[in-house]
Length: 311
Image 1 (cartoon, rainbow, N blue to C red):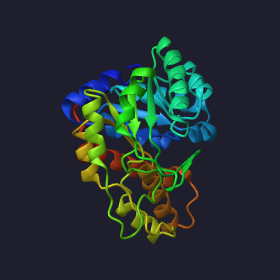
Image 2 (image 1 turned 90 degrees about the horizontal axis):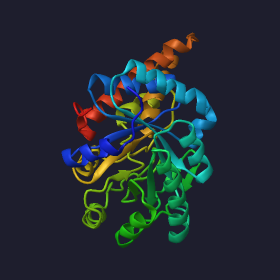
Image 3 (image 1 turned 120 degrees about the vertical axis):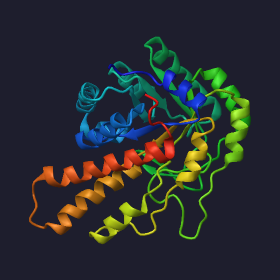
């Protein structure tokens, strides 16, 4: 099955009260773990690539790995650029075979955000590619995205209609309390998402797909394994899964997951190397990481996204 866009995925997800997982990929083992889980559960899937992933693994390597996944897995898969910083990187990914791109103009003024997003939309749509825009800024660190808690901003619902109508975007990432990275909340702080903002945006943009970035739950099981095997991730706290499931039942059609994958992979690798100091075959420790990634994605599809059987 060839790569698809997210248009039909999101239409079905909105109507069905579930969300499609958008999982960040960096290497073969992560792609294998994700796609094997989604394939076995017959779930639609978005594989997304950040600028950091493109720098690390190279655009060509990543797209060819995704092509291999398409051969091995008979489910609809979209290839998405995560946090495109400018028109040039979006254009490069559109021309390079991606079926969806995100232009992140959230750090610009409202008018400048509209201008750059509209420019990307016009080019992307001419090539049959869909576009995700963003209003509001999430705190946290992920690759080239680094926003302090002081600079983070909730999405203003009164701006969404104008932004969507003037840019022509196909989906909208909003800020309602999620954040990038594994340290989303401080110890003792109650995790909270602004569902009132989401509800207001849904009223203003009926039947329009909404996206949540920074939505990893930071599995304490994997944090514990990392801690017990030489790591140091004390106080890593993520988004409660029941909140994400609530969001998936509403207008949220795409939930981004990256940090959870990194934790799962790292836990597997650390456990093997810590318990077997003489181990040096990467197939052994990467296989353990891959198994964790598959287990994590299986759990997310079944218990958070609700996308099983929806391919």
